[in-house]
Image 1 (cartoon, protein in one colour):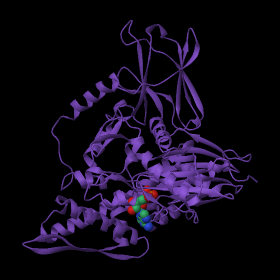
Image 2 (image 1 turned 180 degrees about the vertical axis):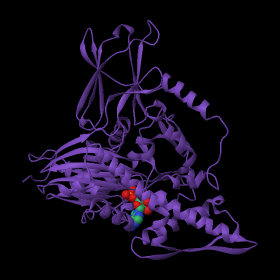
Image 3 (image 1 turned 90 degrees about the horizontal axis):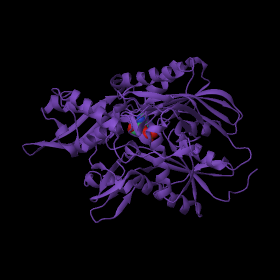
Image 4 (image 1 turned 135 degrees about the vertical axis):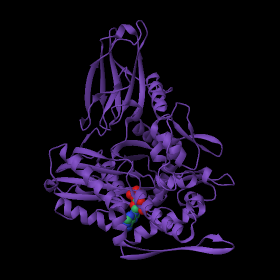
Length: 536
Ligand code: AMP
């Protein structure tokens, strides 16, 4: 049995809304409580009116009064280019300012200064490092940090950078579902196919793994980056707003403070309904008319909530079936379903899991903690003789832009990693000019909808030479080129500018969109302070 590690290590789940840190002692992983005694830390960073940097619950507490200087949801922005579609959409939803960083990446304004997302996440990670060091009473130089399985190469690199900024030596970036599977199956000698069903605050992810002893092999993975707990909240919010409108002909969506209260009330009601069959959303004095207070008082039953959200739950099972079908598997071939993410506690989700897979979800794996626990187990086993073997897959294809702004796949989805693919350099766009290759990652056939990873530039004379795309065990991309003079040579990707191909594609997409715009929904789209609540 291994003794105490020479270099202590923690596992960190850096979530969209909350983060969690865990460490292993005598082979048992445990969550490290925060300085407030909680097991999770809100992933929020803020600058107070007085200029103090706040992290966690303190930062979250000042969101309503100081929305411009309160940074949340960094997980959705980190590692993305400023010009990417996701970032441009989130700009109108988030209450703080998203700007272009020094390398063309998305960055944020905090107290008037540009901060990169790795800096922001680095502040959260540094805080977790301090919490762990205080609790464990020793220095913690190393970490394993988890990321969503669908994260691109650039997002993984950016999280690594955040860890470095926090003062960690990041030993591994691990996929969240793989970490959850580790928390379930580590050292149990299982031979099973399991499905990790992760319904969190903002995203849904599903992974299918084969467990054979301490070999954890991901067979397939998929999900929806825009399906999560906030969508359930929004159904309740709309229900409350409609009720208020019917009674008073007042649209509460116009008042940010009222909306924040409705949002909190909706989420609390949703969580309570996981335990009890009926609640009342009771918010005194949300508005006033002619000096008289108006209250929200809306009864909500679990049955009604199920009706309001059943289509969202059904969508998760369509995605499960799609992912299973990629490996010709049926739901009844899954031995265990592991639940991750707070929203998976909803009774309707659990009932439907039982009906869909013919078995109840596995009890005893804590949805909020298992990712951090698994990351900690992986960290602890890294230098051990009987360490685990992880065989992961690429969750989003990597490819290059074609002259028509399409995506040409080089590394396919679900290819086992590490992996490598080669192709030959095409001729330059204009004779005699350098060859520029723009690399993207994503599921779309059109590069505007994919994430730009970087460009490589080679002389025109390189036409026809071999290029290798290699994925390492963390899903990080390495590109090399068969140089006539030096043989295979590593190339670094430049990401400073938006590539020409993407500029053209964006311009075309903008031209297509410039027809008449129709507002969707009765109250139209909600932006500003409320916006982030829609898609946290
Ligand atoms: P996570 O990203 O895993 O922290 O998940 C957070 C989401 O889970 C939020 O949308 C919460 O409202 C939701 N959530 C947490 N606890 C429960 C519960 N008991 N029942 C339903 N949803 C919950």
